[in-house]
Each structure stands twice: as structure tokens, then as C-alpha cells.
Length: 329
Length: 288
Image (cartoon, rainbow over all chains, first blue to last red):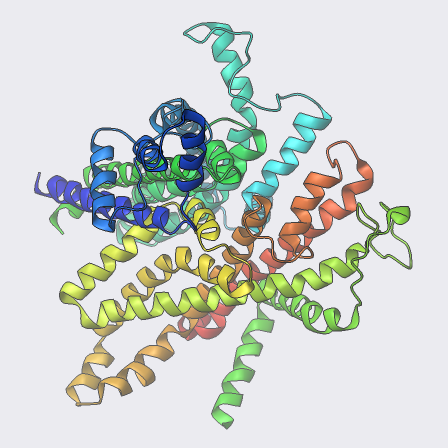
């Protein structure tokens, strides 16, 4: 319980710090981003410039003319009400409404990729630790080396050129076909899967390598420990030692890496989702950046930072559940 | 001086004994030569020449020409200078920040440690790449120093954490405690006892930062927030994607593939070399 509260407190503090950091980044934007919009609004609605400025500032929940602490108060108040302002390009869309559309797709793709690459990595990593030589080991090493040398966005580009443009097997953009009705029906589910194949493949190809290396290292470490030696001395079959002794114990430290991997994947999303125009957080981040829609950008950045904090918290709690020693520290 | 020469000789002896490290060293040397000697010897002509666009490799243009008839090889060579400089600038800055914060955190301890660790944690929490994007826009990055600074700001966190951990474990090592009991000066212990034990760690971190800095800077260029020189590999890649119709145009393939191959080779060199450098500088790994 004590451990849980402490972790929760750390996460909250982290959250506050992240909010402040993103607030500061937004304030570093060159020039007054509200001013041109206020001028435009004043001439369009026939109201005074000051009045228009006030209206625009309210809409974006951001007034650069206020003193800095007042801006922070306004920002935090807005956050607590769930108000992140509206998109600068299309004031009809609130940032929160865009987030609620985009976030589920990113979470969907990233978590499926995380599960697949985790399972693959655990199996292959354990295999590498057992078989020190041979063709399997060599080919896995080759794969890991190649994948760690090529950044994920390049793999995304190559996959999209081959499968989207040359072979035309997968759609160019979107998250599901416009012909299906969203809901729990077969055509919709198949369409969603069809649209997400390439982003998931990209994530799996690039992140499995890291899992393999980590799992291999951890397994080798476990294999060197006394209780494995004792088990071997007792004549327990190798297969059981591998499964019950090595794999299980070697996987425990992997749990903390899960959160880091999640953060890394979501951080790479602007390039990968952007390449496939898969309309999740990443694609919106890339879009907001291209259109210099800073209000939308800070909302998206805040949202993915919060999901990383949550992922860290979950990983910490899971870790303490699996390894009770942690709770005592 | 002779001692330094001796350890230099030792260093290369160990590197050449390890096949991976040797390959890595060769690749890295090749790119450094390309960026210095190669760039000095190859004239760069960026004038547009539509008549000669998309030429196949020939004696005049060993890698053919791009979508407006400029020599690809010359662009790649001049680009390597930019890419490597940016990687080094980023790595030096990030290593500097990371080492300062990590070591102050570990040496001073107490509240300072808590505060700095918390600060480090923030930068490890906010996803690096999106933060980098918005910082690049906010600072309106136009030159190599600013670009390196942006890359460094988001990547020092890992270094700080590793350095802090290493110093904390060294602090309680028996030979350091012996030094303290002998009453040796604080600075003497840091520079003569602790620092030499961190060289391999810092070298590996440096290469990692260099490698990541290059990969992310190319990512930034592809999203168009960092466009300071058209010959940079990342800019070449994004130009290839935008202007050659690469998805349907096999003629643009060389222009598109060349920066990718160069990037992958350079990254490969870093990976191989850093695995060897760890063994070369860490005598404990050698005997095993």
C-alpha cells in the first residue's frame, strides 16, 4: 500500500512537472500567435480589436498578453475543466474532441505491436541465450543488427512504397474504410485490421530487436545464477529449467522496459503514422506541426506524455507484484 | 607520454582482435575521411540542369543525377560532413549536460540529488521526438549549433541517469573508500580514480548519442522543421520523397536509396564500434 501511494505520488509530481514544461514550451513560440487571428476576427465581426483579442484568447485558452503566472493559472484551470482550447485552423474542433478521436487508434496500434513484439522478443531472446551458436543464433543476430541500424521511419517509407504504392495491397490513408459502419460487426473489424497492418508491422519489425537483446542479456544472467546450477545438479531436465527457471525469472526485469518501449513507440508515431497517414496521435502531431497549429500540438504532446506517465505507473505496479522484493526498498 | 602511447597501442590491439569492432572502426574512419578529405576534393555544383535529370551512373556521375540533374555522389559526400558534424555537436552537448547533472546529483546527494533526479525524469518522460519537433519550431533552428542543442536537450536524460548510477556505485567501492581514508583530495579522487573508470561508459554513451542524434535529425528533416542545407542526407531523403515521385518512378531510385544506405552504414559502424570499444577500454571484459 505504502509502495503504491509513493508511486502514485511520484507520478502526480511528474504530471505537474510535464504540464509546466509544456506550458513553457508553448510560451516560447515566436511572436504573438493570437494577434493575427484577433485582427482577422475584429474586421470580420466588426468589433474592436481588444474585444476580438479577448474572444480569441478565450477560445484558445491562451492569452500571451497576461502576466506569466496568470497564464499558467488560466492554463491549469482549463486543464482541470478538460478544456485545452480549440484547433487554430479549424476553431469548430476542440482539441479534446480531436484527442478523443485520435488517441484510441494510436493506443490500439501501439498496444497490439507491443504485445506481438514482446512475445516474439521473449521467445527469440531466450532461444539465443540457450543456443550460443548455429544458424538460428546467427540469423537472429543478423536481423537485430540490421534493424537497429535502420531507423523506424525508413522502414515505414520502404513498406509504404512497396505495399501501398507498388502492390496496392493496403490503403493510402485513414483508419477504416468509408464503406463500413463503425460498430461491432465483421466488415468493420476486418477493415480496421486491414488499415492497421502496415503501422503494426513497422512497429513490430523495429522494436522486436530491442526485446531480443534485452531478453538474451537477462536470460544469460539468470543462467549464471546459483539456483539454476542447483537445479541442474539435482538432475532437473533442461527443458523444465529453461521454461520454469530461466524464462520466468528473466522476464521480470522486462516489465520495466515495457513502459520505456511504449514511450519510444509513441514518440516515433509522428513519422510512422504520418507516413501511412494513419489518423492517430502521431499523424495529428505531424499535421499540427506542418500547419503550425500550436494549440493542437501542445494538447497532443500533453496527452501522449500523460499516457507515458500512466504506462510507467502500471509497469512499476506490475513489477512490484511480480517481484515482491521491490516493495521493501 | 609514453604511457599514453602505450595505452593507445593497447587500445588498437584490442580493437583489431575483435572482428566487429574492426569493421566498425573501418566504417567510421571511411565516413570521417569522406566528410573531410572527400568533401574537400569533390566540387559541389548545385546548379539546376534539367536536361540531365535522372541520369544513370556513368564516369561523369558515378551515382547518376537527381531530379534536377545534380550529381548525387557529390551531394552525399558534402552531406556526410553536415551529418557527422551535427552528430558530434549533439553528442558533445548532451554528454556535457548529462555528465554535469549526473555527477553533481551523485556527489552532492541529499535534496539536490532528489531534485536533479526528478528533473532528469521529466525529460525521460516527455516523448523525445515530439518535444524535439516543437523545440525546433520554437527556436526557429537555422544552423548546426542550434540543431545540435535541440537534439542534446532531449537526449541528455539517459546519460545523466547512467552516470549517476555509476558514480554512486563507485563511491562505495573499496578502493575509493581507501582513498578517502588516506585523506586524498576530492579532486584527485575524481580525476585520478573515478574518471578513468568511467571512460568506457562515457565512450559508449557518446557513440549512442551520436548515432541517435543523426537518426533523429534526419527524422526532423523529413518533417521539414530542420532544413539548413540541401545536401544533408535527411533533406535529400525528403526531397526524394516529395519531388521524384519515387513510388512510381524507378529512375529516382538511386537518389532515394543513397542517403538511406549511407545512414544505415554509418549506424552499423557505430553499433559495431561501440561493442568493441567497451571491451577495449574495460580491462575486466577482456580477460573473460
